[in-house]
Length: 350
Ligand SMILES: [Zn+2]
Image 1: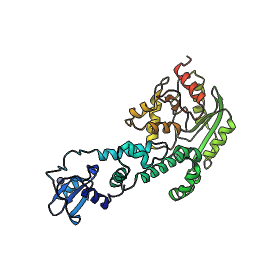
Image 2: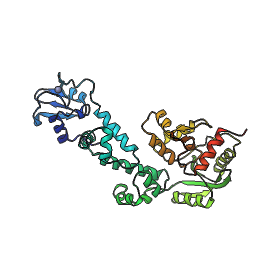
Image 3: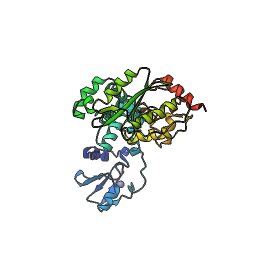
Image 4: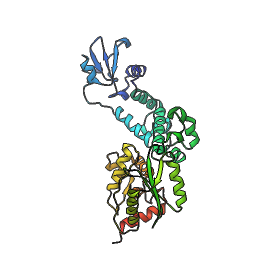
């Protein structure tokens, strides 16, 4: 986060803009008093004004709270909270929202939103959205997604638009950026199961890829592309054991096995995935329920994304999450497989 921009703040003081309440305070060096931006008292001269995010810091510097605007009291406006809500709104949008999309959500004018943002964060909503989109793209690549899927997933609309902007930000092309297992020793195997071909791959620490499909060659091709820089080996004993557990589970004769996974992920993805692993077999949750139970009720889309980017099918049972609106939503390995898994878990054969 950059520092507050003084010009913006000074204008807020002159305009007594309550939209900045709780975001910053100003102290007046000639009187030794500090105020909220919307204080009705006479405005100081610019050269006698200092700004701070923190009223406490101004107090410690020797300023007394103003008796009129009581800057040491509770923040009356929800400007700071609004900035946070707008950030969440931008983060959860499927495509990059424009000011025209954001303003109605905030019930503010476009210029007020822009000002609020610049005042609080030092950047425009567009810059914030762009930074967030790049970060999402980077995470999707690291989660093992292909460039094209990652581009759509992170709201670029097409992969060419990523390339347009990516070099400057990533320092290299997206394909080169994704490390694709560089330096890792990965064992893998493909077997037949009740639900078709199953590819299981893992490191010494846990499973790093689980894929389901009709055609083993297609799965292998995709896997080899994703881990092109890794040292790929014949499956060792651990992989065989993990694979056996998944095959037995897919036959419907044993409960879901809780297997270790070794996947790069964000802290949020990991929280979602661990939550999914804790959903009892035979039960499903809505995306919105997962978000609420993780304490982030506005993060429904982010939860859906964490499910969609799950690189270890079954091991992280993302099939246990369905939309509240009904239906099954997407499943990277085929909607019929998701249906079969849910039915199997709901009605296990003894
Ligand atoms: Zn005041």
